[in-house]
Amino acid sequence: MSKCSICDHEANERVRIPSFQKFRISCERCGTYIISEEAESFLMNNSEIGGQKYILSGYTRNATLTKKSAEISTSNINDIIGSAKIPSDPLEAIDTLVLYLYHESTKKTPDSFIPLTQNDYPLIYSKNLNEFNFYIRKAIELGYIENDTYDASSEYRLTIPRGWIHISELNKVTRASNQVFIAMWFDEKVNEIWENAFKPAIKHVGFNPIRIDKTEHNEKIDDKIIADISKSALLIADLTGQRQGVYFEAGFAVGIGIPVIWTCRDDHKKKIHFDTRQYNCIFWKNPEELKEKLINRIEATILIKKP
Image (cartoon, rainbow, N blue to C red; front, top):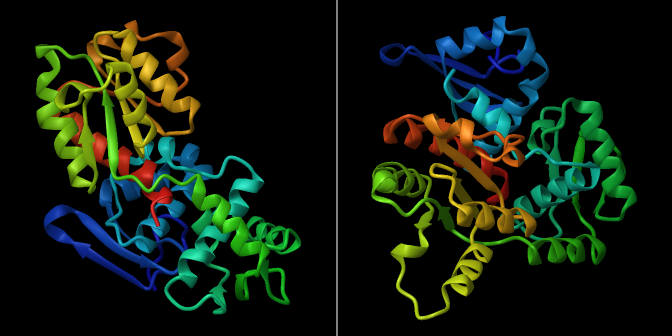
């Protein structure tokens, strides 16, 4: 039987798409995804990316869960790895596990048990089964979920009341928004990327792009900006032109926990402020390139956030 290109687990299905030099792969662990032959060769022969395959596995498995089409190519591998919403600490990993059980239980009834298997650890971006079992055990010890085992070989459900109270608290801080705020230079020199990159890319993934100078309002401009950023699911900050307002708006979004995607025209990359160089910025040369990269980055960024 053929193997999965990401985790080397036996694949349920592996179908070549000849016209596009791609494979459609279905794996119990990584879900269903499309990968180019070039990207598959890159994964097999690049030792540096070996320790990061679990990120790709988490990305494709969560894409399958949310019925999104996951596609891996050499042009988007780094974007996926660099922007994936991996739990930042054990508590966030446990929350991600609890949220998964919650979303699955909404398809049934609150008292239903949800199965977890040895191939489910990519759901919360765990590196291996042992790590996944650790989070299951801790979620039980915290009183969020229940069953009589401590590993991924059984079925689990949220506890009443503690598990459901915790879900209520998590949902209060989850922004159910389909709005993406664009912070950019308001100049004719970059209008083309608004029309041919930002707008189509954001709409492609099912979100609504908003740019403050393109909306009708009667409020004070600063108040309107703060309000619109606060109710956005994501902010895109284009640093082309080095506008101070863009840095302010991006900084405000970071401060209140809204994900930020950084972009910049390639010939301006040496001018960006050093404080932002720690972030994985998309450098672009034309709207077509920016649009493609944005679609990949947005999907990788918001994937785990949307039920």
